[in-house]
Length: 443
Picture 1 (cartoon, rainbow, N blue to C red):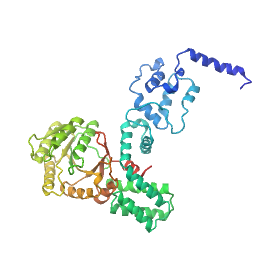
Picture 2 (tube, one colour):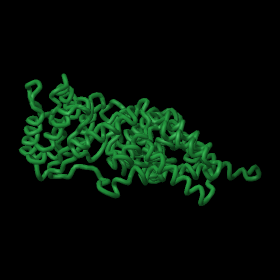
Picture 3 (cartoon, one colour):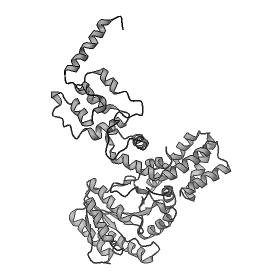
Picture 4 (cartoon, rainbow, N blue to C red):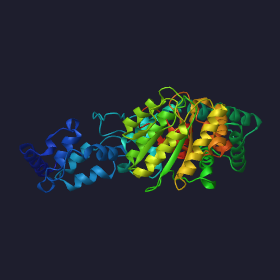
């Protein structure tokens, strides 16, 4: 290189020209903000009609988050940035390191939890431009809520399954670990039997044994969909869907109704709420507050201690008159061993069947995940009264032991429809067995 000064001179000339012209190369990488970078990239006259403000936040960030894939490179190729040398210098972060260092995105931290969430979504076939910040935040909350159970389970399981075929002592250790996670006796027996059979057929390293255990859990959680229930749990368009929501006081029933109403409204469904929990003090007012947050009207009787069945009747009439697609019915939640409450729930279900015979009816039980095995008894009693078709697990953001989901599915044969892991209106999501199992024993 020293023997050819003419080549050096040729390289020096264009760099001098670059300093004289206000090209984007002159801006240091460290001070380029997302909006400024987009403005530089769209500086060609042919691109001036493209709006600069709304595009960069979701698309460019998520493209960088997924190993800096095609999005940004494609835009660079189509714009006026023509210096490959400078682009190479700007793309030098090591694998796993973000090239958006120094750029803050409100409500999101680029940390280990973010990377795990992105991997879980990518493993389900989700592209970067199909993922929202809300989904990333949701998975992080779910993983944090199950953190205590996950750490306990994963450490014990890795130590046990790496020893080869399970002996009696190992079986007892796994049984103890699963029971402590509220998995339940029946589900635990099935898990141990399947895992033992696999380890007898072939010796699996700990990582492969854990992967096989995940497969067992996913199949167990998805089994109700293979028998009596639809996996795609969404209201039918242009018809009346009625979801009767039951549960004891304190389980988060009214809060859950507000969150479902929000999801429904955001998904484009015409939604109403019937406030039929007329016995609990301030229950109707609480429903109205959540209805206001979700921008959904609440049908209620202004008279205290009014007949819940009458409120349901009025709610169905209003829904039929307005072309409503989803009617959410809040019911009383006194202790499940009260016979009068169960009789009232059965009466509500009869009103629904008689008043709206063509409606698609679902009966969902809201269970506090922190109750563990006590929740199973609630599910059994409520199922007898209103013919349950699904369960909503709440409060997975605290001391909950997520194994209760497996116990409910195995012993009741009911699918988990939604799970909640927070108090915000966005903190309720449709249940995904893959995401749940990864949050329970992944990482």
